[in-house]
Image (cartoon, rainbow, N blue to C red; front, side):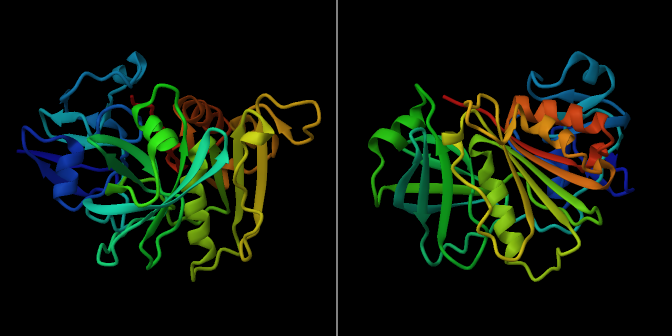
Length: 329
């Protein structure tokens, strides 16, 4: 049995066969995570003291990161007592994962390659999640992950934005076969992409493609919250190739003051908005990043680039939160 100590002096024990994340969860300690399959970077932690071994081949971290003792908490198994340069998620409630049945309520095309899917759950499902989290949708033995696009409320429905991928097994179902009242299973909630308590003045969201789904969920939650966000500035940067690829905006919100900035990477001549990439657009706004939190969701390339650029411009590294979308066939 090994002892693991976090940056905020919380400790828990881990046996010789469990990963850091598994041991933390079994001891009621919540750590950053997402895929839990060593395929994304959400659970990266730095080992200050001690040693680990990997359960699976690590194809995520660079050679430099490994030499600096960074590991994936969902993949690293202690071989000695550990000290980690990471804090837990505090008092945030992580609801237990479960599997519930659901039926397709509606399918709506938002663009030629993106649909809005609405699922209804049984009234007795009592499916709870933190706004921003994702679930696995299961159909005919195929399992794929999608972020929930509506905020948690006492209603039995879930909304998703789903992109078409050529050759994708689940895409073939969504875009060619799915119909109302089809039976699916929902597994979740999953991930740790949700709003943190903060005294930072600026809350910045970056999203590309269907990465706007968890952002929409969080923003709706903020608007319907009893908490006072009047002293915050909320920025939403949404990246797309062309203007017709933009299918959601927060302009209809009533109680939050949102600074919404769409950014096109392949804009046409008549586009008068921001051009380029969302991470660069943040820098152009001259936001005080020392007094900011950033939440990024979308392509892994955008997230990695955004973290490098924004932390190089004074964003505290521990104030960057992300959820990368990883394609699976």
